[in-house]
Image (cartoon, rainbow, N blue to C red; front, side, top):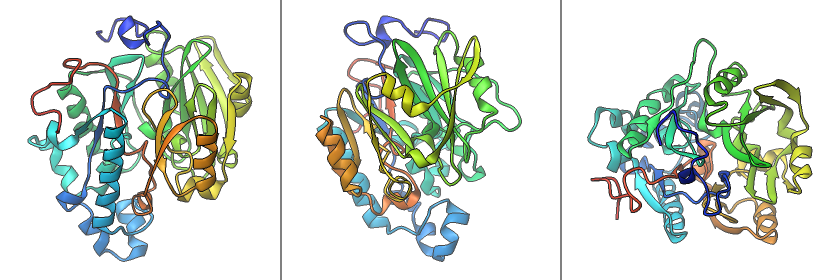
Length: 348
């Protein structure tokens, strides 16, 4: 599919022709990156604890080996779910783009710098990162996705425009391709009308912009649909929500909107959302997800509601203020072939 074709084409849909949301689309592969073998955590571990946030954007220093072991656990969980894992290094390790990853521990979060859409699997959007330290990641992730055959969907940026992948959640509402877009600490409100212009009507039907409370970094740390019938949310971190489409804007009650769709809202507290990433899950197809094991009530609630949830350790990785969703960039279509046999793309 080219950038001009309708994103509702059969290749972007499920076997019965239904457009798939992030939580219901099974990725063909997931791109990950472990910074530890490159030594990217060494600088972080050497600074005083109070410097970790200012210089590296991590809440605390991390133990490199423990963080690496936890990342390996995430990769094993993805593989056990039957989804191919592709390392960033296998895609662009021999290019100049990869140089920044050797010293940037934040490249761990492959979700943030580029965005893919389950209903438009041949396209990607380049993010516009808030923090100068992270802006080189945009070129790195763009090169990785283009190595897999995806085409960049251009959109107009400009002064004050910030977009991060953690704030962008592809959802489907009553058959409409809906983008849930968080804004506040990272992504900006200025971004919303520009994304509406870029995405509607060919690549989405509506956006719901969610204002996040101060201290909530990204939308996937505050609210995330994890199945057709279940949403997990930290209500205290939601300030307001506005529906945007081709006709204009209107205020909406976000959690009420989910309930109108007969979705159960599992509520967690602000502390669990911020320090345990209790709302942050990597969805790998219908009722299948991976999350951290730290918030036991959230783990139990998701399993009680029928989610096949793999809970992985994350007490070291969470110091980077991200969860399994943040550390994964799904690729939905067959960019090169159904078996993803691009040269040097897939690791064994």
